[in-house]
Amino acid sequence: MLPPASEDWIRLVPALAGLDEPTRARLRVLTRAATLPAGTRVFGEGSPCQAYLILLDGQVRVQKVGESGREIVLYRVEPGETCIVTTACLMSGIDYDAEGIAETDIEARILPDSGFRELLSQSAAFRDFVFKAYGSRISSLLMLIEEVAFGRIDQRLAACLLARAKGSGEIGATHQDLAVELGSAREVISRQLKDFERRGWVRLGRGLVGIADAAALESLARP
Image (tube, rainbow, N blue to C red):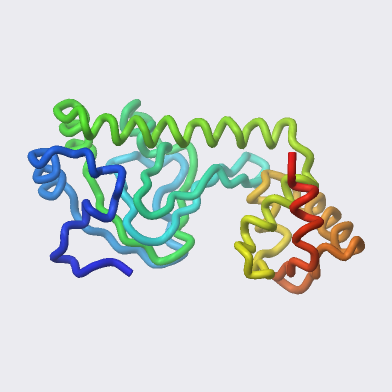
């Protein structure tokens, strides 16, 4: 739950704690508040990038869609984080080459392109914030590439199920949702889930996957 709008939104972003007061003041002036409902397409492939988004509440899924229609989730933007696809587009002046979808209702601060360039050139603390977020996310993307290229789908699926369940014992996701998450084909994921069900590790329902044996999945997911 966010604090009243009158309170300083910058304190909701721990990574901005190192900003000096002049930069904080300028950031407050340059940004505007934005709220979007779940399901909104925040940005789309081929569209121009005109602003830098700092997420305060909610979750945005960033994904890539291939010419064949296959999708893969690149990463999710969580509260206090920024989107490195947006950062790359702003710094290079190119259009988006991925899309962002609001998975929940979101609240954010929007920093226009001109303001982003101003702060990037004038504030060392703001540059550190931008580049640390960029570097951290690049490392995650490299890990994703390695997993997709070299990882076993059964291990990756087991890890994905455990991460999505978050201890609840049930995941609200279709086989297609999980295929998108893992950059695989729905048929491959369905076949693997059926194998997990046969082993007694999961329970399959319409749009649901129940975790029946978390220990077995954890053992498989372990490198």
